Amino acid sequence: MKGKGLDALASEYTTTIDTAQNIGLGTPMVPDVGNEPKVIAEALQLAQGQASTPIIGNTGVYVLSVIAKTEPAMATDLSAVRNTMAANIRNQIPPRLVEAIKKNAKIKDNRFTFY
Image 1 (cartoon, one colour):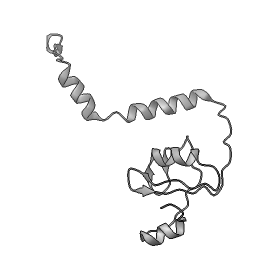
Image 2: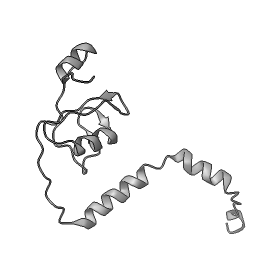
Image 3: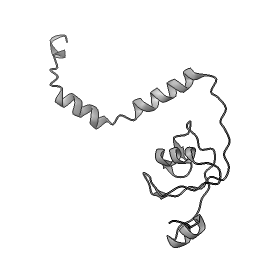
């Protein structure tokens, strides 16, 4: 990979080059790709014109090159940001994990005594 441009890599691995726009911390999804937090984190760390090393993502391996980068505006309503982050965390806990916790907690169901 060293010294190769995106065009050379795309040709070597018979794939295409695509452009993603408006990538940022507020967008957990890469447009037309899906949930790729490692790709977004790497994109935010790169400087304009800088290329990344290969990134193993959820749906493939990616190599990034930043075309343009602008500084985001500061969030003015932090409560909305907190609520969004809290909702994302709640939605990411798999139901199987909750069931495993219940199973190992030795919960005794006494609801029948009240109804």
